[in-house]
Length: 403
Image 1 (tube, helix red, strand yellow):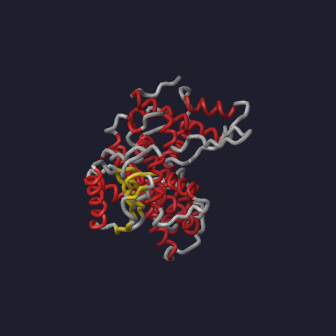
Image 2 (cartoon, one colour):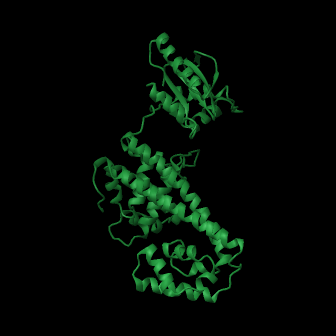
Image 3 (cartoon, helix red, strand yellow):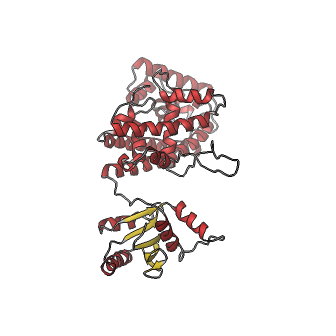
């Protein structure tokens, strides 16, 4: 890459920037700005001033820094300024090559970012379509909710073992509607054992819409259980109050997760790739929506290998002397969320009892070859195959066909 740039080192609340005419030819010294309208106007005015004096287009280069660079990105888009977002791993490699000590300071960072730009072949940042942007944000929010749900479940089970010992074996799904409805209404065994089967059955029916015979059976099972156990606390103890609050919090998070994934599915149904990806064995509405949210606009990937590298599933190459560098681990330098979703899709696909499943066939082949892989390695190889299949299907617009 060549030409004039403004290199920006973005951090929380402030940024350091420096302008260059070309590699090692600086236009300004390093300056600092705060993330205010006045600070960002300083960068915008510098770019316009450089374009007038140098009579050529000037772009802004900066590292991807999580949420911190998002404001700068929006400012540049609103002012129609060309921008390049650099992977922090590339600029870290530049710093390492420049010096044995590889120092990192706010004053040196704009220079190393600029060197990375001039020494690499980069693609300019693109503005994602509104649907893809919304899907991506909802996907990240959904993942945060899942983290909270896992923590809620751990705390809930610990409290449940005090108040309702053995309750987790009573129903097939401890976190299902029936299980949570009964224990939310009667948070102590003494409160449940005094109720009639008909009373408890009506509460279950109202929440789950089960038939009366099914609800009666479940209610009877719960009441009989409450008469056989001994609780670790009294019905008026603080442990019961904590259990009630944990159930309420768990229900709120479960409902929020369901609302979020339903909103994602509603949005993703507008996109042609939804039906295509969902046709692959083992991928349903939920998984297809989350995969598309992480893939984004597929047209930005010109080759299959670019998508594989974006997922971090490309093999690490390290050749030295007689060591051929083959059969190495994957790089894991891409989108870890996409990689996890592909691994999950492979796991679901393998569990299916279907004959028309090329992913399952590939998994069995890797497990039964002369030098067999372990299950995790075989699934990772399947994830790499799956992302290639997805790329080809989306490129041609064809649904899944077993070969």
